[in-house]
Length: 123
Image (cartoon, rainbow, N blue to C red; front, side):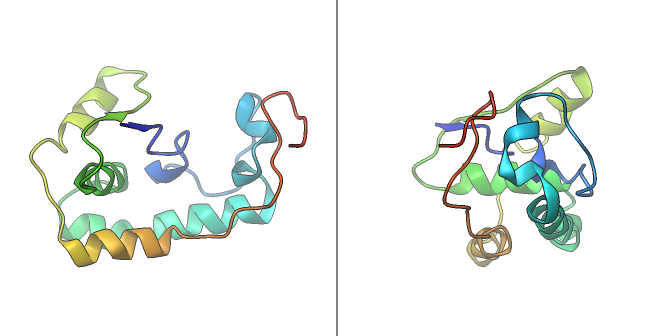
């Protein structure tokens, strides 16, 4: 099971990297500064591949997650009916093996050594 495979929305393709947050993401390094901009740009770079499959970036990342042989279920955050329909659009969809690895490569950006928890405490 994969929990939050879209990394709190970061891998959905909806962010540009300049947004700010007042929730738990305000303390998460992936949603701050240059790292946030770099990640958002990397995610946006998946658009041509998503288009090739007739999917949104959200769907492409979810399909890649579900194509891993050890993952049978993905717990995604859903806030409305449109998001349910978008996620359900992945059912039965498959991506080619080389594209799975391309997605992983595009999104492989080094992680900082220390992160802040939801309360802002460095761990």
